[in-house]
Image (cartoon, rainbow over all chains, first blue to last red; front, side, top):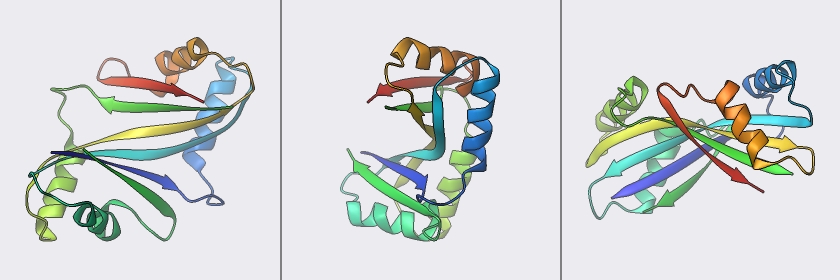
Length: 76
Length: 76
């Protein structure tokens, strides 16, 4: 079975990578790019029967730095 | 307006980061993790009226390395 985890920086946390992308898009001539935030998407290939609680525990322990990041789990 | 871009390594391309996460999950005692692939999610805050074609052009020019990565655009 598949699960997906989306990890993004929490609002208010500076996103230097997003800023760099925003500047780069501007220098390539793209107008109207007011903000860019970059995060991670992690696709997990799991044994059948793995629960959302287990995936959440993976996030808490490893996949997300919960001090500065928030995460969302999508099962199936 | 908002748009989201998901960038993942193409199938068949080695994902060392995903492998590292898989091993780490195993060493933390999580069983049944058969595969992990890690990609980027980029949230764009754009001027109203920005078209999907423009966001696609951003992907082709900057956001994705189309040799080894595939991308998906989600508008709104």
